[in-house]
Amino acid sequence: MKKPDWMAPEGPKWVRGEARVCYDNPWICVTEHQATAPTGNPALYGVVGFKNLAIGILPIHEDGTVTLVGQDRFVSGQYSWEVPAGGGALGVDPLESAKRELAEETHLAAATWLKAYEIELSNSVTDEIAIGYIATGLSPATGDLDDTEVIRLARRPFKEVLDLAAGGALRDSLTVALLLRAYHMAQTGELPQALTRAMLA
Amino acid sequence: MKKPDWMAPEGPKWVRGEARVCYDNPWICVTEHQATAPTGNPALYGVVGFKNLAIGILPIHEDGTVTLVGQDRFVSGQYSWEVPAGGGALGVDPLESAKRELAEETHLAAATWLKAYEIELSNSVTDEIAIGYIATGLSPATGDLDDTEVIRLARRPFKEVLDLAAGGALRDSLTVALLLRAYHMAQTGELPQALTRAMLA
Image 1 (tube, rainbow over the protein chains, first blue to last red):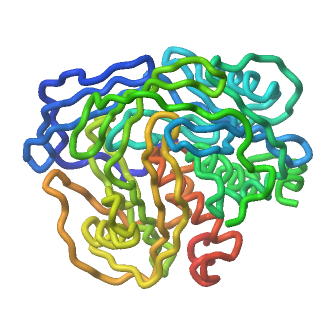
Image 2: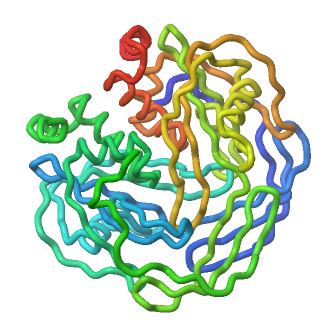
């Protein structure tokens, strides 16, 4: 979309100096940069580079229910219910990665894909970009999980799941943003009327 | 909020083995763990630990406008318009950090603070938690920027800014999630009626 004039960049920028790689694995690469801040002050800047896009999908069934994925999360040590999601290789069309993830985790294919957002998840430290899709017109598909994944599925009414996100019982950023954006799309006529009625019933 | 029964944890969990610190700076600490996946397969897991909460604030004025902050971002190399935001020390009440950030970046204080979300930004790799607030009842305040920050302010109608987020012209996750949650709160009667009318006009 065209940006309004008031958004035009203005003022001094960060200047990058020498960089060294501090950590690297198949998913991330951490680099430390000598830098000069827009104020002119010297700074050390550690950047976490991501080797994949974060792809999230909200599959909405005709009856207004959505399918979520439950799994134990290593980092938090907590069980987490989230939209189907996974990494998409940087050189691959994100929509293809989304179709693959949806099939692998939920055994669903979708006739219609709507891009819901493209966001920087933590832009003061990481370069990770998340792309969210709304998937509708669902039908059965086949796919296999990664060799580290054990998941469960739940199919629940959109309204119940939106309330869980608003109330803090769902904590994954891709999930919360997709549910809120789907609500916004439903309210503003970006989704089919019959689906909107089923979702908000 | 109370979680429904279907959300109860079930199934095998990740098991943590030995860990070593691979990188550390004042903002993040990267640790690599030997681990066993829920499938029983061995795995190496790199975790980016954050030393601060990510705190974002959407200040909404009585006339339905919001104040945004513009700045050059080191990681993307792009100019970015975002809600006022910053790091909150882990041992400090996040609301106090939010008040400080709002004063520092926008020279505003708020009479009313509503928690909009608490989310895990990238929970397969980082432990970073973001807390978003809606700030209303705004009045002038004083505060000083960090020594690396050069920012600009813009005060624009909520509806215009929400449309920029939905259309992809705003890309910061805290910002997009706060705007969508504020829209949801306005639609569901969680914000004062007069403010809702001004925001959605």
